[in-house]
Image (cartoon, rainbow, N blue to C red):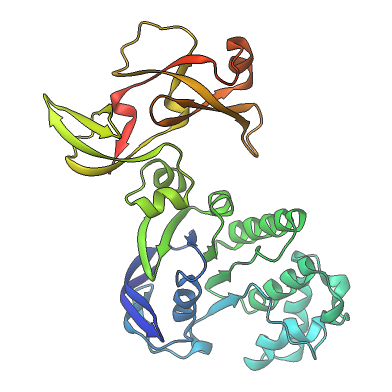
Length: 349
């Protein structure tokens, strides 16, 4: 297990602020955040590249002041950081030579890892002539050949085209599974994060704002930033008051009911798949019922068979429905509609 306790660091105008984080043994943990959030600096602290206040424990041992070469971590950067004056073979075996492995052991280990990562045929190649995907695999091979306890990945897919991204992503999944390797992967891409992470942490301006499983963070964000960054639809700010064990939230004069009994200024999310849309008024137990008209219709990228309909009910409400339901309802722009959702489907924070 990796345990980070009250880690703080100031670099110029930037600060890491009291980072507290636990990552389980064998876990694939993704740190998600925008450029400049401090993600790279944090993994560099784990690797041993910065002095900081606070503590980092690995399996209960304080490694805060342990030299880089004794931490048994492997860091892979976005730009690969390959040595341009060395060929592929010499790049991969560099870490083994530093650790004074025998020539026989070096050749055996390089051969094994190069076959796993499918770069064996490139061993005599000049790294300057490789594709981006090949460079990333060589960079991974150079780290994995030393058999690190912890793999640190700094935006490993960012410089790759979509096809190569999928290829490298599959390699990462396979390696993690086969070696039960504790992995910390940083990215600014939420879809990348959810496709890989056992759990993830959202980072913003040097702080970890929230950790948890991807679906938990997406459905139950704890801050406006996390909600926006993870692409939450139907995010509104309003004033909430509680009457008779129900919250009534005023959003620009529209009253929305919720079973989350928060009071005062709040944010709320109504997930689009939890909203029912109809051309006719229907009898329902849903507390929230509004009449409006359709102002936007669009397809959702990478969600085949789902249509996004935006209804103006005084506030714009996005509704996700299946293509079949959309066609059966025969919905069009400016059509008058009704929308319904239950009070317990309104998440408030």
